[in-house]
Length: 176
Image (cartoon, rainbow, N blue to C red; front, side, top):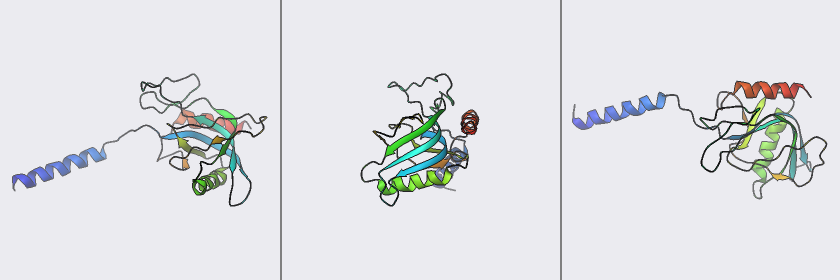
């Protein structure tokens, strides 16, 4: 065996060994939620806004120096940046970013399909602007921009299954 062949096999072996190591990156999701219902405004193929009703936990942003503190009643780990805030009940009122209407409608329909199922879904970007949770008594006005990122994902194998967060969302959803 030549030196070049040995180097090639060693490199392949090293890459394979690294590939099977469990890696843990920061969770990119901005909002985890159990969705009760969705109101798309106006109904039809050209919606302008959405109300997402349910229980929510929003990503806690890092400070400018990259540090992240874990507030009271929050969930996750400061070490890998997966901290989510206290559970809030109410609704998000959002409008779609210009030019992204098809993507928004697809995601809103995915949220609508999850509504009432008690499935925990995630959407939005951890490092982007997140909508505020409005109280049920607040009238819908001045919508926030809907946070596009990785689409709508179910909490589970593909994304971190934070057991404390999942339990808190489930308990909040049951206390309707």
